Length: 136
Image (cartoon, rainbow, N blue to C red; front, side, top):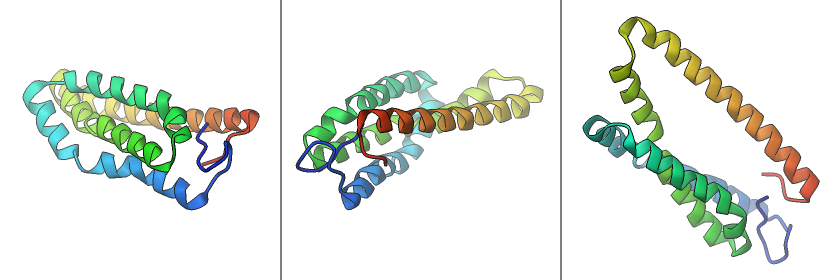
């Protein structure tokens, strides 16, 4: 539940847009660095990044309760942590899979991620509607 504003559950539309875009500010910048690290050091950075991203996701309501800028900072860190995922995913596929299996398993991986985004969005919206949170 992401609440922004002076009172709990008071949603400010302009603040919502800024907080949501904070993820993309952090996400778009370090992808090249993530690709370089994946090629040089392997896929270990994904495990670290996913741990930080999970922690930031869990702490999002706490950041939001401390104000707009705290929520924005949490979302930027969340984006920074998830940025190396795609380059590392592609590096893992190119190293670990046989050439004849790459296209099939890459398509399966991308499809399963889309399904998980859909399920996650639906369950979060349902959870927020039952807890009185604002809908982003």
